[in-house]
Image (cartoon, rainbow, N blue to C red; front, side, top):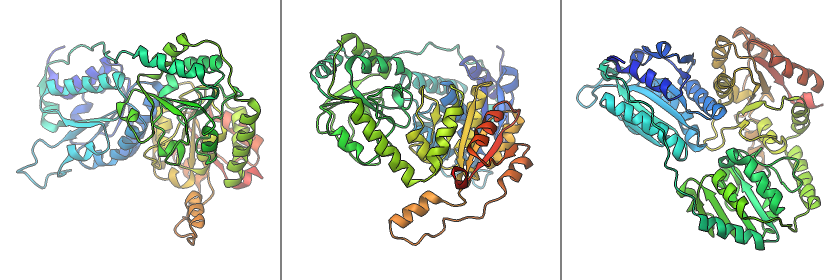
Length: 526
């Protein structure tokens, strides 16, 4: 390829590394990054706000398994994208944000979009943030990002390119590399875990989102050992929901600690066992705990780990299965079913009516539907009672816990899975953080349902205030006419009067050429 502006060369480089879609907003500072996008054969999705672009890249990455890429401008553009950068970092999502930056800031003040330390600001919410001072440096940083996405725990990276450099003539980027280099699995540690399993009477597995690519292996090990299991919210679908010995995604139930205390061996695979997994500090085990993770930091965290295995879930579980013999355990289907019934009733009591709506929707949904949810009570209930048949098909902003995630993430997910069913689940308050991205969804012709839970308040916060004996304050806001607002953006919009009508309208939405906003209120559950 002949010399051409660096921005164009970067577009071709990204295409050669498998990037088909870029999410972003062009501006005077990053315009050179847009020079080669169409020529390279990359689709660009025009977000209405940089926060939306970042969440779209996140959703695309989660849905496709490939890195999501976002282009933003200097200063406010990058600042607007820092919330989704933090979300992708905390949830281990491979997102690459490429921004422009000023050529010189030490002696020249008062420039457009100027920040004191743009590179440093971005570094607070991502794995690393670096400026490329030369074309070769830009290429090396991009390849470093893609290499780490594949061989290490995937987390947000940020590269900033000076304005003048982006427009300067540059040689073509090097050819793509075949990245590898994952550490060899310690067979001795696998044998240690296998030996402990063989002597355990009540073995218990906990599977997290890091095990989503190892569902077959996980199910094989569970079948061979008769072990009980929990999954984190991100790990739903790793275990067959019809397995009579799975407790499902109920770790957040306080009394799950009592169940875990009855195990004589716990093996946690691909999970941080974080606050947003447990909603308590301790797992609750009083037995040995084996941890399996690709992140060394997880293996040395606050939980008492008796065995630490640095490995991806798939490699470990396959090796473990090869060393196991058939065995039975003392877990019974009856005790598991009893706990699950109690916890389901607790969930329904805490947030009345939502369980019935979830049940109706789950029965009607296509098998391969993929869900993107926001911080809303409907999602909180759904994550516990909506069993998933396959892993990696419900995405939620767990770690950073941001509002406004669902709609733009669903747009990114729908772009990654054209022709396959995508579902957006949002609450009335959080939806308004990124409602403007309806325009982007209409532009791209994306047909998916937006299940909008409208209880006309910040109900979760109100409940928290009441539990704390605080008079509810600042939890009720004036809402727009959501149906009219959606139609103003060119979307379809309905408000079902019954659960059967809800399921009918949801299924119709998959066949539309634009999003359908479906307003749900507490009255829907009767």
